[in-house]
Length: 444
Image 1 (cartoon, rainbow, N blue to C red):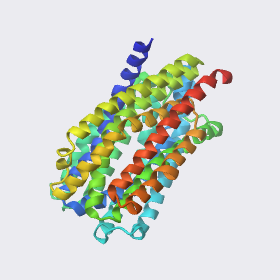
Image 2 (image 1 turned 135 degrees about the vertical axis):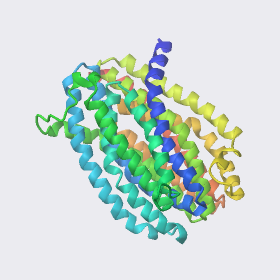
Image 3 (image 1 turned 180 degrees about the vertical axis):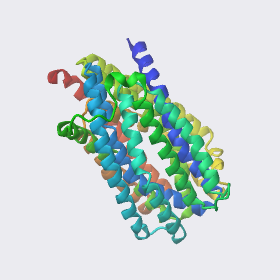
């Protein structure tokens, strides 16, 4: 039974993981190519990305409600309901994309209030505004991607993410460095490249779902029978807490970026590199967690408590094992990996030390990601949201600030705080899943 559960989770995970890594590689490519412009440009990218992620992650969390609701309907054999989730999700996520775009443009006016180095504020402001324009294509892509995951058709998003990397690299080459007759725009060029690649992804994902013969049983067309306010309310009920969960986590890392920015551009650049590298392993466990969401959601639709628990714990164990392997890699290559981004010896040395802390919290990071995913499959949102608030904003960031400045540990103190928050989140998420899944039979 365990072998079967592992196989099913891995089969679902692989295309999601590849797609997640493809998406992350666009960010890594941007950092590497912007890093060639200079340390200040990389630090400005860190500031702009930190602020944008706070907004984007809420939108992504909101859109991810489409997956469990689709997976539950699919597991119960209600194919018509799957199409309803898709279409009502399109209304919700399109409106959200417009709102988040306008909000990003508004927020960009206040970066100068964050007490960051003056030389990075101007470029970061322009970069953030360009990124803000990509919110609508992000939300459109997410709506159709999450639906596709909910019905376990996973390869289209994987291929589109991989192709988007080619578009992003080419656009970076053109706009950052000034090729094919274009002026060299530096960091702003990276933002334009990101917008271009995200628009490409949205168009391709919509076509992949609406034109696929595999999707026909779910009627993925734009034929709205009516505006289903009940379904939209369900999407918001699941999606908004999910967005808030991600906000609490990402805002803690953004807060860490702001605190580290007070220490100097070199520390902030090292923080950005370490965060980029940690994100690579994290994207893999997000893929496994997404597979856990799908399998748990299908099991809930079938009203099978045993399958819910097996799917959840299998995903958690796989995440922990993978992250343990990633920890070994980060420690072994701690001095080499930073050189892929910069040549500054001081930045490399700081990053190498940060990667040891990254290695220590890998397993906790993997388990807490799995916990969120499998609880999402049961549409359990309120308690996990409170857990993320406590872990990151009551434990993590305050302790990191105290260690950085009161104990004079500097940038390392901030990362020790993140280690504490991830560990607390992992323990509490798994306790919640164990309790909630045991009681699930009483709700069927």
